[in-house]
Image (cartoon, rainbow, N blue to C red; front, side, top):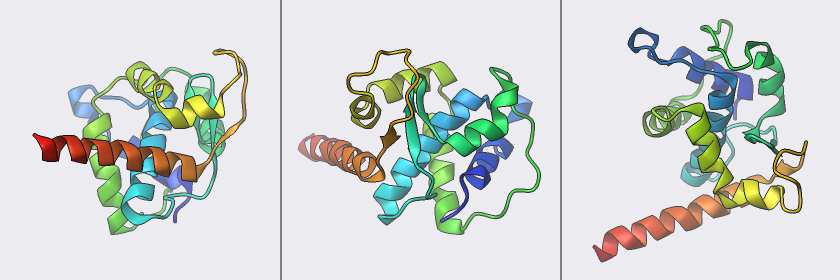
Length: 158
């Protein structure tokens, strides 16, 4: 397991800035959610221990939010001082960046809003209301197991 700030730094520092890509705090939070989900699915253990919360704009790791909130909707510059991430976890981060990194922050937000872990954690809470409800890791893992299994079944049937 690693610190979520190190995972955030990995995503920030692997943005293809030369092609015009950027990493905003909103996009970063969604990539952390997908990285946690795929790590749970692949290794049956969390990438980082800190709980994610079901905020109005999607899943959030509070410590990462507080570290980068000053950037608002602007791009976060390269981040120095992060620790190395183990090779297996880095493979997951690369896959998440390849799959989800092409989407805008708002598109990623919309995607997380359609998924059960965030919706279940916010059940009964108004869409824009403040919320610090935890999105349990076991809920994230179970949802992605169901989703991945459904994709596998569909692919096998084709």
